[in-house]
Structures are given as C-alpha cells and as structure tokens.
Image (tube, rainbow, N blue to C red):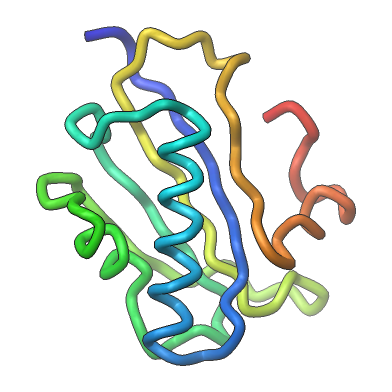
Amino acid sequence: MGKVIAIRGATTAATNTKESIVQATTEMLEELVSANDLYVEDIISAFFTTTRDLNTQFPAVAARKIGWEYVALMCSHEMFIDDAQPMCIRVMVHVNSEKDVKSIINVYLNDAINLRKRGFETEKN
C-alpha cells in the first residue's frame, strides 16, 4: 500500500458564488489527481481552507461531486492576513502512495500562482 504522503493545491474562485467555488475546486482537484497519477481509492483525506471572502459554499462539495465518496473531508477558513491572496481555496490531500515525496506535484492555478511569487510557498514543496 505504501506510505502516506501529502499533496497541496491552491486556486482562486472568480466570484463568491456556490458555482464559482465548486468550479474552481473541481478544476484544482482534477489537476492534482492527474498530475500525480492518483486513484480515488488511495485518497485518505482532504483538508480545504478558503480565505474569508469565500463563504457561500464548502469546497468539499466539489470533491463529493467528482466521486470522493469515502474520502474524509474538512473545510475551514484561512488565517486573516491583510495582504493574503484574496478569493483563495487551498487543499492538503493525504494519499497512500509508493511515490517519493520529491516527485509530488503540488498544483497552483489561477491567481494562486502568485503564492509562489510572494514567498508563501517554496518552489519544490
């Protein structure tokens, strides 16, 4: 079965609507699964956060819609920092994997690519 590894992702929603949050989260999760060659049955849990300007839908709804039926899901708000990336959805996904953690691809989409430029995330992991 392998070991448990964590994979991170982040994206931004276009608007604070249920549809926009689900769409952005779905895109991020599908890219994270594709980039890391994951199988849903290997996903243990996902912890989602949003900035406080996103409050109309739980990002976990997107995970259920794409078939993460038996994955443990949790949602929360990020810490409020004045200059934080607005409209941001983040996820940390725990999976059973044989992969080396150095081969994991963390996914940053839309305006979340700015997180790397601002020094909030490192280039490798």
